Structures are given as C-alpha cells and as structure tokens.
Length: 459
Image (cartoon, one colour):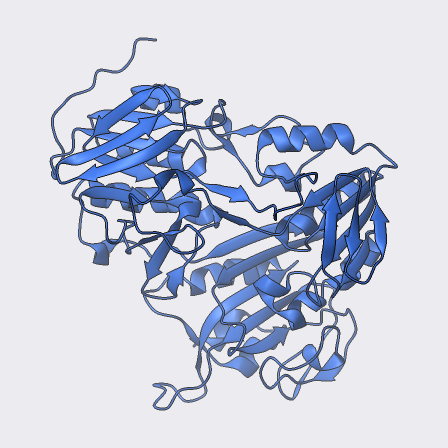
C-alpha cells in the first residue's frame, strides 16, 4: 500500500513537524491522536526496544497464558507504521535541545529537528545498587526470560508486594512455582492503599499457596537468593525485584526541569512547565496538574491511553483547557484470584477510610472513625454503627477528605479515592464519580451500606 500523502501545511500553532519519543502506549496514542485530529505534517516516532508498540499490563497479569506481546495494532487498532512518516523503533533518544523556534532530538545515529516534541519515554524498573543479579519485569523481553526460567517446581522469591509483585505471585504459584514474597512494610500494597486496606489482602497469599513475609526488609539480593535483615536466608532459582519504577527521563539531562524522581511536571494539557516552545509529556514521565486531584503522578495505564489526545489538542492549537477532560488516576489489577480497581488519589495519612461490604467474608458489626485499625482488625469492616454483610459479592474501600468548616452539604464529604475488590457494579459507579471538575461529595454511612447503590450516597 502506498504511503499516505502528507501536507506541510502548518497547524493553528504553526507546527509542521513533531517528534514523539517513546513507542509504548502513550507514544503510539500520541501518533494516533495527531492524525485523528487532522495533523498533516511530518511525524517521527522513536522507540528503544526495537519492536512495535505493545501493551504492558499483560506482562505480569498474563505471564504464562499470553506468550506473545499484546501488540497495539490488534489491541487498539493503532498502526504506527501507517500513521507516522518515520518510525525508528531501535533508536532511543539520547538528548534534547529546546529553542524558541523548535526542538532538536539527539539519537545515536544523528539529530532530528522538529517544531514540537511529545515525550513519552515511559519508565524503568527500580533495581537498588548491589541487586544486579536479580531480575525485573518491565519489557516483553523480561517476561520472555522469566517464562523460560519459571518452570513448575522452581523457587521464586519476589521482593516487593506491590501491584506487580502480587500479580506475578498469583500467576506463578498457579503454574506450580514455589513462591515467596518479601515486603519491607507491614502489609502488601501498603504504599498504594495504606496498611489497613493492604493488610486485608494478606490472606489471599495463603489461599494461593504463596508464602508472604512482611515487615522485614531485604538486606542482600542475589541471583540465587535473598538474605533478610533478620538473618534469614531465602534460596531461590529466580529472584524478581518489584519495588517500583521511575520515569525514564535520564536522557534529557538538564534540558528540562525534572522532579527528584525524574518526572516532568506538566499542566492540565500536558505541556511541560518551565519549558520554552512546544514541549509536551505524556504517560509515565508526566506529573500532571489536576484541578480535581492536585499533582497526579504517571504510571496509570488509563492516563497513557487518554492523555495524548488532550496533549495533541493543545499542541495543535485546539480549544481552551476548560473543554478538556481531567483523567482520574486509575489502576486495575488481577491478583491472587481477585479483581481490583483503584480510582482517585487518596491522601493515606489524613483521609478517613470507610469499608463497604466485609473483606473477611464474615458478618459483624463494625466501625472505622478514620484510618484506624490494624490489618485484619475486625474494626475495619464497615462504617460507624453500620452492620457488616457477607463478602460474597466483594468489598469496596472509600477514602474521604477530612471534614472542613463550611461544607456546602452537611454530612456529605469529598470522596478522594475508591478501591473496588470483586465488585463490578461499584467499579462502574466509582468511574462515574471521578468525571466531574471537582471531587464528588458523598454521605459516608450511606456509601458504606453494601445493599445500596453508591449513587444513593450522592443524592
């Protein structure tokens, strides 16, 4: 098929050429958005892995049952080879220069000049100094090597019980691997959900045949095992480090202002703050300013999916920011036999926690005045004075901002975050609650009643 004819006619902002750095979901969606919004200029896409764009969540969620990458041509119908003029999948960017009239992106094979750049270079897995023998899971190649090594009966030690660690633990244990998970904090997912809610997932590990060790950090991590700070040795055939990731922005050097973790701060339309000219950042690299949530870090799949369309609209001179959506932070996870969805951005140190349904699977009278209660404490399974119910239909955690003087609706409080567990109706309702320009206000006792729809707590 002949390549489509392009025009050098500039956009409303005078843009004739754009370089997109990064060939993951955010980068591919940026290329697709440029064409979908009528851009006829030159588009160059730079990738680092040497393969076409693919979806990353299946790497952990479907480590064994999906051995080929989930190519975005099939998943989303995004064919970057047909949409971009120049696709270089094995040419990572090595530097950036920004001037008043455009940008220059450096690569190992030469420089590329353009009117604008969209930075979508993703993230890199954290591997602390001295842990070089351990594996990480960030790319399709990482997943392929893990599949070869993790045969039935193999001993796997996972350092970190976050989203990735829990997902890998579940699928590998189900495949006959002997799995031990080490978590330095007192509970799984404590960083993302807090100890009270994270602790409610500990029983899932036992049910899945996974050994979970919490509250003891790893002192030494090698390819053949882990030594804990209390002196215990955990021999292994494979050690996987799953302690988080950081924005992959080291290649930028001092070209743009970056946060200590490497993130690029962007406004509501993903324009990089403090950068002259037309410089945008989307996906894992961007820490976005949100009218609803404040500063929202990258790392959200949904943000990488939806953010590029907003960035491209601004790049091409589209409507005012007031017309754009404000994508809510959203994480989904399938782990240890359970489906989780997290919406919003709760402040775990000050927000009040209310549970809807019974995470323990038993009925009891409960009460949570705030985020009190230890993991697994019977006092963490309901709202003040609200009887619990059986957990046969899952459960939901809701976080509310502290009460403020002069609340417009007495009794209603700002909802900052929602975690649903095996509760699809609450998942759909929670998604709708985070679509407005401001945080929704709910009545906590009504929201805690699992027999009533969440919408009843709003009206």
